[in-house]
Amino acid sequence: MISGLHHYALEVPDLEVAEGFLQDFGLETGEKDGSLVAQCPGRVQEQVRLTQAPVKRLHHLSFTLRPGSLDSIQAALEQAGVTAIEAPAGAPESGLWVRDPDGTAVQLLHEDPVPARPVDEVLVNIGASRQRVGVRQFVKATEDVTPRRLGHALVFTPQPEKMTDFYTTVLGLRVSDTIHGLATFLNAGPGDHHIFGFLRSSHSGFHHSSFEVPSIDAIAIGADRMRSKGRDAGWGLGRHTIGSNFFHYNPDPWGSWIEWFSDIDQIDDSWVAQDWDRPPHLWGAPPPKTFLSNLEPRD
Ligand SMILES: [Fe+2]
Image 1 (cartoon, rainbow, N blue to C red):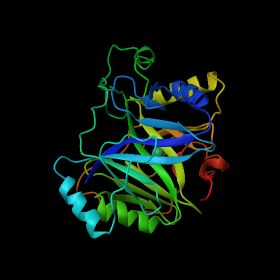
Image 2 (image 1 turned 45 degrees about the vertical axis):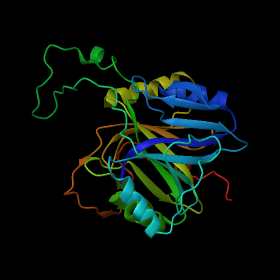
Image 3 (image 1 turned 180 degrees about the vertical axis):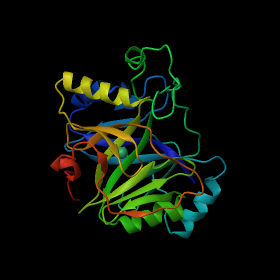
Image 4 (image 1 turned 30 degrees about the vertical axis):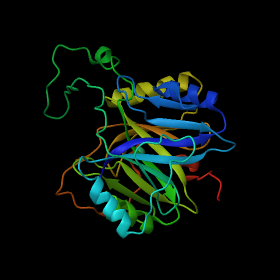
């Protein structure tokens, strides 16, 4: 059963442009097998893999599996009539490879994720809490602002019911919450409210990835950094409804999005999914009109 999102991979038309963008966002970049890879500072785990191609599109998704769950995953795949495939060109060959109902290549790695970079506790003087005494927060807040880990990704799909069935019944994720007719959020058990999800669209595609940063300050400082480098202002700062995390998004150079998050809802086995009819943000400006545009080509 899936334990988390390991990395995601896109085809993009210009790796140099992509590298500059990811570095401005706060990731470290390098080269592996002819692809551009990016990871979070202080964490040795590939989080993004980009290969060169004429147009931007989703290339593959990679998930980690819980220890000891490989046999039950293989049995579930067999029961669903899903056969293993070869790793697609440009992808790492390790693990088990299958295609989801939209045809996206999915890597299943029977390994634990690398722990996220350790961070200090964030002490607050909010509500009844008086935890931070004798500390200048405006200095402290700037000490650690880079991404710690890839938390989740959302993809477009024309068939969210079929995709939900595959990722839950076969791969063991659970539905956390839905936005009626639009979005489905999936969890991998106790921990983050969602590690993966879908947005209904006319065709498949990649919508956004999201990286945890240590604080709401880190989100806003990151947004300032992107603006100072001439990047599009994007969407945020805000607090989401579903998942409740603070967020800021920047559009990547090809019309999908990348997010910093902090303070996402944590869930346990007693969590009960609900169907919501709410805008995606609790407060903050509404999303740009292009936020739900799926610019990937239809096959
Ligand atoms: Fe997100």
